[in-house]
Amino acid sequence: MDSQSENGTTTRSYNGVLENPNNITIKGILKLLIESIDSSANGKRVISLGMGDPSAYSCFHTTAVAEESVVDSLQSRKFNGYAPTAGLPETRKAIAEYLTRNLPYKLNPDDVFVTSGCTQAIDVALSMVARPGANILIPRPGFPIYKLCASFRHLDVRHFDLVPENGWEVDLSAVETLADHDTVAMVIINPGNPCGNVYSYQHLKKIAETAKRLKILVIADEVYGHLAFGSHPFVPMGVFGSITPVLTLGSLSKRWIVPGWRLGWFVLNDPQNIFRNSKIIEHIKKYFDILGGPATFIQAAVPRILSQTDEIFFMKTLKLLKQTSDICFERVKEIACISCPHKPDGSMTLMVKINFFLLKDIYDDIEFCFKLAKEESVILLPGIAVGLKNWVRITFAVDPTSLEEALDRLKVFCERHSHQ
Ligand SMILES: *Cc1c(COP(=O)(O)O)cnc(C)c1O
Image 1: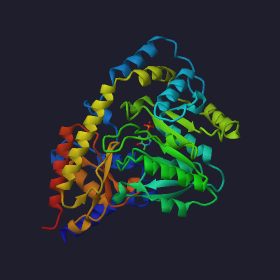
Image 2: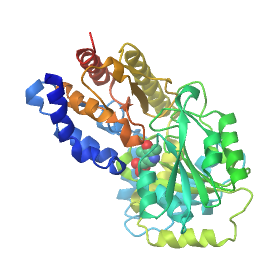
Image 3: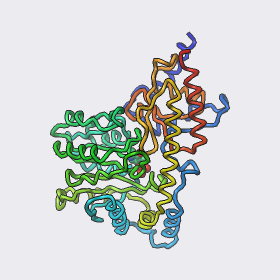
Image 4: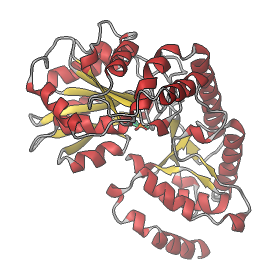
C-alpha cells in the first residue's frame, strides 16, 4: 500500500519528463535529477555517473602539450583576428595529416572543415544532407543530438537497432528494410556512446557495403576515435571511403579531455572523388560562411597538439578507462536486478538493463534514476534519453574511488528495492 501511494506521487512528479519522452535531452534530464536531490536528507555527497565529461575529475587531465600550445598561440598575439570560415589553413592541414595516419589514402586539407566541437559537425552533416522529404537512419540506442538536429532540419528520422548480444553491432537487415529512395544517410557512432562498442574491421566493411547498395552516405561519428581499450583496435570508417563516401565527424573533446575547447572537424572521405567539382562542396563552403567556428587561437594550437601529444598520455588515458570500465562491469555483475550484456571495448559509457521482475516498487528507468538520486545521491542517465527505455547508461570516465562508491550505493539501493 505504502509503495503504491509512493509510486503514485513519484510518477506524478516525473510527469513533466514523461509527458513527451521524445523531447528528453541528456542535459535536461540530468538537471532535473540533480535538482531532485536533497543531500541534507540523505547525508551523501552527489556522485554523477550521468554526464560524459571526465574533465571534472583531476585524474582525467589533458596533456601539458595541449595547454602550452594554447597558451603560446594566445600569447603570440597572432591569432586575435577572424580565421577563414572553413578554418585556419594550417589547422585543416594538420587534421588531414592526423586522420591520414590511419587511412589507406591521403586526405586533402580542402576535405577538412574546422567546427565548434563535434556537435557543430553533426549540424553541418545533417544540414548538408537535408532536402524536402528526405530521411536519415540513426542508431538506437544513440546520441540524442542527431534526432534533435534532424527535427530542426525537417529531416525524418528512422531508427535501426544496435544488437546487445552481438556487441551492439548494427542490425544491417533492419537498415536494408528501413531505407527507401528518400534515405540520404546513416549514422554510425564508433567507438560508441552509449554502448561502449568498438566495431571490427569486418563489421565496418559490411556497413559500408550496405550503404553502397542503398546509395546512401555514411556519417561516422568518431568523437571517441582511438578510445578503444578492448580486443578490437579502432578502425576509422574512412578506411572504407572507396566503397562509399563517408563524412567523418570528430573533435579534441574526448581523446584530449578538453570538451570546453570546442574544437572539432567535419571531413569528407571521398577518395573516388564523387563529390569533387560538385555543387555539394560549394554548398558546404557557403554553409561555413554562416557558422562561427572555434576561437582562432584554439585552432592555431591544433597542429602542435595533434603532432606532439606524447603517446604516454594516450596510453595513460586508455589504461584508466580500461580500469574504470572493468570496475563498472564487474560491480554491475554482482547486482542481481541489473545486467550489462556486453563488456565495453571503448568510449566512456556502458548500457545496463534493469530487470523489473526483481524489483518490488520501481516500474521504469526514469523512476529508477529519480529514486536512486533521492536516496543515494547517485546520478545515472535513464535509458529513454538515449532511446532505450528501461535501461540506464553509466559513465565510467570517473575517478575510481568515486566510481566504486557510487556502485556500492547502487548495489545497496537495488537490494533495498528487490523482492526478498
Ligand atoms: C560528446 C559527443 C559529441 C559532441 O562532441 P563535442 O566535441 O563535445 O561537441 C558528439 N557525438 C557523440 C557520440 C558524443 O558522445
